[in-house]
Image (cartoon, rainbow over all chains, first blue to last red; front, side):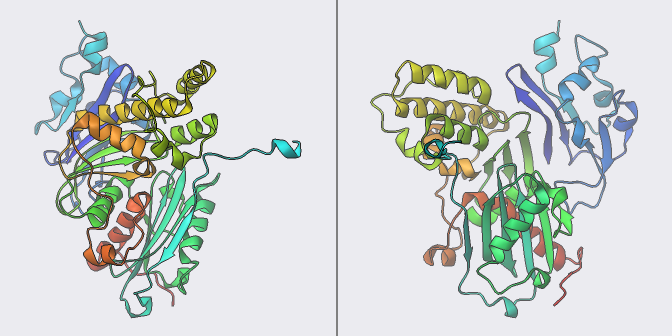
Length: 103
Length: 311
């Protein structure tokens, strides 16, 4: 399942996208995220999934634009730590930051 | 307030409840329930062994537990069923963690997917839920499993609540907005924003200019359709495409969205031919609660949940 966490507003797309079929629940993204917006636990959408899966914490979903900004292209390292650390390549970010703040 | 100033509430849509006359719940193995406490409306659906048995559709009050209780009482009203007879109840929607009679909470994304699959049939691939305060676009498979979803709950622009506010502003009952938005000579440009606050002042401006009400309704509906379109474009729409939630009842928005997308929405009718033949009420607002009740059934069937039935 592709889970888009975040939102779209008049200024663009602010999504963190997680491919739960690729995610193995290793939790490395949780460790490297400087603003601790990620967590690993039971799948809240697919309730019959047995293995744990990463997700964006409930309270953080409307703040992604601001909390993810320091890690984004034009700001900090490239790619962001959560994307770099994810071996299965389950995490990606929308282009909002690049469009608005990128060089 | 003086008597003659008593306000008419144009946003107020009618509450409904219903019971399936064909089912004897006492014969069923499992009675399951789903309670969907949304920001605007609350639905309780009761199912007997996965068959649609009863529902209540009410407005959400100021607190979730009481709204859930009210919805459930309303659903039980025409039945002889008591809360104690229910095997398992699942809460969903915005207030899902505050449903007192529920044993478990499941996110409304899964429930709407499952509910749409049950209501419209296994050919459904894209579900757009137009809620009271958010909208969700969901791609699903033939079993109603979520494949891809995108939610916009950051603000209530272009949602059911926005439509209610708009109805109150122009003094037209909310269910008349759809049909009346087509009684126009030409399609007006859409309202430039769906933000409820800004749209309100823009509509006030249009009213002051003496633009006909119907045209303003058309302008608002098309702004809303446009906003839904934005979300759908990102996710990708596949047929069969269905809309659930209250806005699905507003043809002014639905038809304009179809026009913009170039894709028709599926007919709002039961996939189950028996339900269709018997003319069971088909209420797009029920999708979440139906899904929740079906999940309760599935959890009991797979032994992942235990019945809490008392009598």
